[in-house]
Amino acid sequence: MITEKEAQHAILPLVKANLSFPPEKDGRASLSAMLAQYARSVEHARSVIETWIRENPEWPKPSHLHDLCIEVADPAVEIASERRGRCRYCNGDGFISVDAQYGLSRAMRCTHGPEMADVTHANLKIPRALESHYMAEQREADKRAEAWVGSGGKPNAEALKSIMGRL
Image (tube, rainbow, N blue to C red; front, top):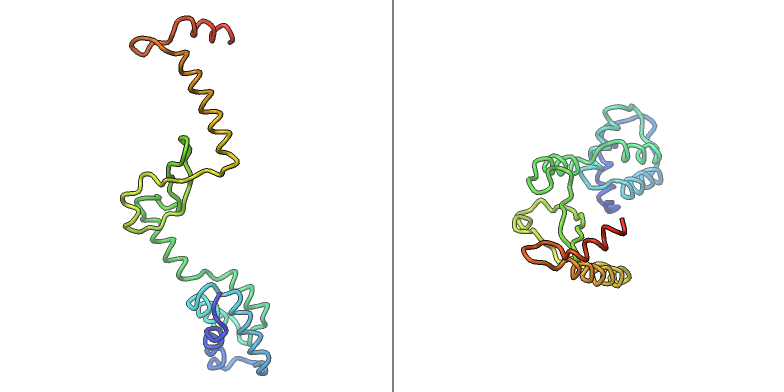
């Protein structure tokens, strides 16, 4: 989204292109309003207007600009996706995996910056609603681990028999 003033400046090439069926002042205002609402950046707005001038001999309607804003790629996005393709942290998919509490991991957007070089663990918190569930699960796991007490990392023979009997 861009400002109304930037959108008005972006449609000036339409005036200079001497296209047929020019709108009145109200028509230009609705064109700039549509461009301000749907263009993702000033470069995107310029690209949309240049595409229209190249392909059409008459002035666009607001709906035409809306459609072109969807169809024409934002040059800034193309540059970012090209740069993302060379990223050594996310390998081009735009996300990195970081460790969270209780052995969980979470996908986060890669910022493609040098600050990501040393990130191996981001101290992420899980929602409180799930925390009690994970804590209960951890207590159960601790109880199960006590059954596997033995020398040299071998399981307790009695516990092993009782577990195997349940299977």
